[in-house]
Image (spheres, helix red, strand yellow):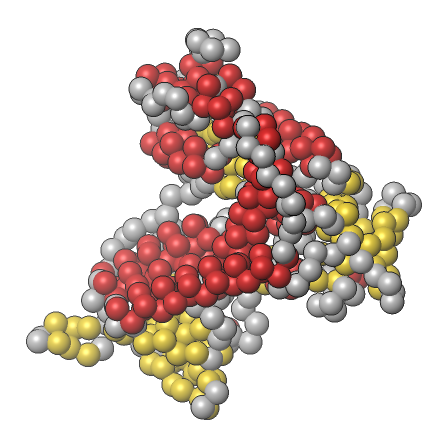
Length: 465
């Protein structure tokens, strides 16, 4: 540990520059640490380069197409509409590259040393980084592991990166496939499936569980399913893929129900696993659970006192914003000796389909399964003047309370659901009652009035229902 005018300066190594890693590095630097950030690919991680941001750029394009195609409903005439798919990909890359440069600027501005290469943990104080120029040794007082996750692709799917692909490859196709089988009806499957359908692809989604978006409210899932079917997307639920055959013409999926589906491509989006391959954490004595995730306590420290772990490699929700919060928390505790803990009471989750889906806290069916007594309030967007004016009337806000009227969960499907969820997330985190939330004056005309009305509806007092 170095000193500066008598004050000790802590050396921190952060392995992985995704949302959790780079924010941990910046936070540590702001707290006065000397920080080295190691990344084998590009800063921003999966979220920025192969996930959250690229998919939202794609969905921005399909939203624009949808707006043009429905412009006549608003009194606007548009002719000769066409899709330039390579231009959509180019725009996605431009946005991604710009944000990557922005992160590099922040790292430089905060005096963070960025080392590009593959890290191997030699000991709790030493990391060897294999760079293009050769091995580089990085010594530090403490380290934060933030290596993220990779797609799960069982061998039976015969993944080849060409006809059977993952979310990594789907984002760089230069044309929309004529047809595609999407295995997995979760966030990625629904977002990409809807986008490609709007680009002209024939889309089939196969989900082994009984509903798409298995982690979300059943009513929400049903509403989204109806929308996907309106868009001519074939959705098969409650049956798994039993065998995959790759041919010269495409891919064939045999299903457990005895039927089969054929298409040009197959996208496998059935989940992600912690990426700790060849990291050497075992050499430092770091322990993992039975699913290969690093064990940490509420302060994000592992069983090795000077090593912290965050994000998709620990047993918490695999979400970029969760990793970011964990990264900052780890930095606070590692550098300043704080005892900060991450609260998972109100973790927001969003799906950027059309309509959007967003939820926080416990879902109604989860509460029922757990035997928790609840009350609910709902309100449909079609009852709002703002939604009518926007031409976005599909969807519902559902608020769930306990017997004391404390809000314990909420689900939203509809326009700008991800934005509206922020208010509901705060309500769950702070333990507000439905009456407290409903008594807050909400702006008119706005979509947020649906939240207010749903809160009033818990007591049967919604004015516009």
